[in-house]
Amino acid sequence: MAKENKPVYGGQAVVEGVMFGGKHHYVTAVRRKDDSIEYLTLPRKSDKLLTSLKKIPFLRGIVAIIEASANGSKHLNFSTDRFDVDPSEDEKVEQDKKESKLSMILGVAAIGVISFLFGKFIFTLVPVFLAELTRPVFSGDFSQILIEGIFKLLFLLAYIYVISFTPLIRRVFQYHGAEHKVINCYESNLPLNVENVQKQSRLHYRCGSSFLLFTVIVGVFVYMLVPTEPLYVRVLNRLALIPVVLGISFEVLQLTNKLRDVPVLKALGYPGLWLQLLTTKEPEDKQVEVAIASFNELLKLEKETESAIKTEQIV
Image 1 (cartoon, rainbow, N blue to C red):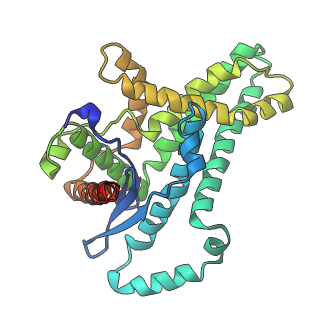
Image 2 (image 1 turned 45 degrees about the vertical axis):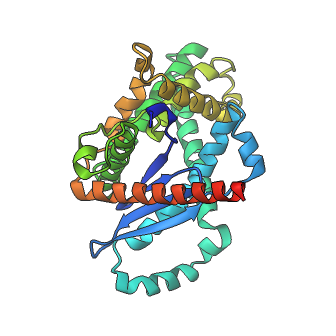
Image 3 (image 1 turned 60 degrees about the vertical axis):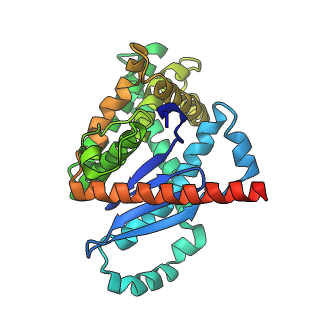
């Protein structure tokens, strides 16, 4: 199968595991405490409104981000519940989940979306106030926007760098690398085994890490269109423009992915790849095994669903 004709799959690293998403399903594989691999499989629900919005440039990025935050939180919650618990204690874990009032009130998906939005507000507004402190020295609009962008970039890099030293996050970054290696191996038409996967790059053009960096770059250009004074107007503009920056950044991410095999133009995606040097780590073989297991399970479910759909169409 030609590389360009292959279905597009996305993924996400979770605690001691990897989630992959296809056209019809999401699958997470997690390494349990007893060294076994457990799966969480969820159908990809189809909504006519969301499907329609995903066809509209700039809007589709916002929908995709919210959807990814909601679905990703479900799989992350599954992995944190399972990875360090002996399978014999699963019944107790399920009981504890039933007794969690927060999950009952908001739901895991809602918590994921709220967390994303809260983080985005903080990431957007803190650099604004820091840049404002430099106004006595850098008073021009262009200077202020540039300083704001620099603070935002430093904030992003420092945050990722610091959390990468924690053992748990380091392992998540290793699974992130395993996720990319599996996708790269699949897109290179190679058999999915540990040896082939480990030879692949841990970087990928469609990565969400690249998207984060693009929001910083795109934001600098978008903010040129609005005033930076007074401060309250600047703050309101930044909040109002969050959907705009996210939407444009998503389109830039998609564009760089399409151009990744074009000489010279493929360099447009390099900044995002450089950031992935921080957000991914080289995985161990056992971590790659989990990523392969997750992806193979997804491929199996996707194939079964496509076959069932074709059968229904024939009947």
